[in-house]
Length: 243
Image 1 (cartoon, rainbow, N blue to C red):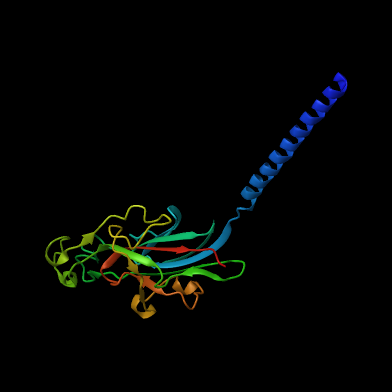
Image 2 (image 1 turned 120 degrees about the horizontal axis):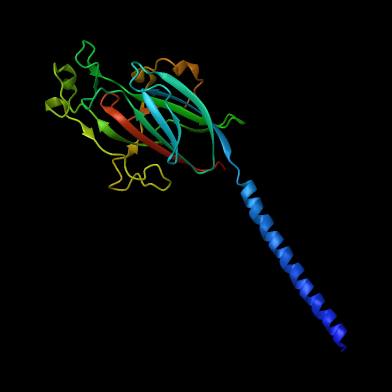
């Protein structure tokens, strides 16, 4: 075979290899780009009413905090907002009823001295279809991290002192990692979690802001077992992608 012909064949072979490699790399790059551009987010609308205050997290990312400070007397209001997310949704709430101190009481020293009562209701829905994605009900897992007073007769004390006599209290830190996917609410050591307690609308007696929202008929008021002594409640639910 002549040297020129042999050289030409070698060049053709090398060129073909380069073209094949280029095509392969282009296909791989296209697939990677497609994965990035098609990993879409879903817009979700939410409505929340709490007595008295809440903070909502998607995983450990704060999405919405009650716009009215818990220190505001009779801080009743509803919040409506939207956010984007990918499934599975890890939905987390910190809900608090107002208390002046660890006695769990409010209006201390006045003729209105009393235990407050809490309660929260919320719903998440698809703005395109109006389908409910999640709502407050007994499926949520909750734990109480502040409970006071230990004896409800503390409410009648002339000089209630937190931690003394009938005015004892229980306070624990938030369990580590409780907002993250995969947190096991049934694992010993992760806190005393139980299904949310459902309370009637009459028991919670919702006030300002509640009537400004059209609530799903199946959205319910939830809290810990005791509306009066459970002052801080954590609740979590993971929602898988709809089929």
